[in-house]
Length: 87
Image 1 (cartoon, rainbow, N blue to C red):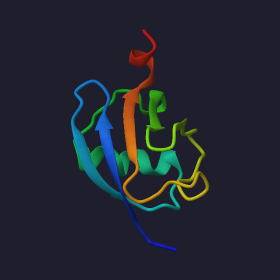
Image 2: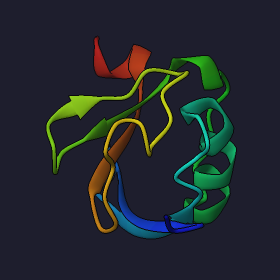
Image 3: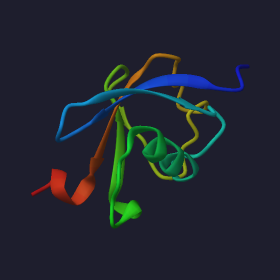
């Protein structure tokens, strides 16, 4: 299994898409700061940030690991502040 995978991460409200490299073995909680650093994403409340896999049509939960959800190299992921997304 690969040590890293590359994802395409889209900032939900700006539409910017960035290439990020993560460990497929990280949980979403572990990966969020790594992803945020790579795409210059800031949130005052990290617990409200959500990730959605557009390539495979599902939302990640905080304790999900990318490898367990079948995340593939090159998948398109949307990152968004959950509170703002539900206004």
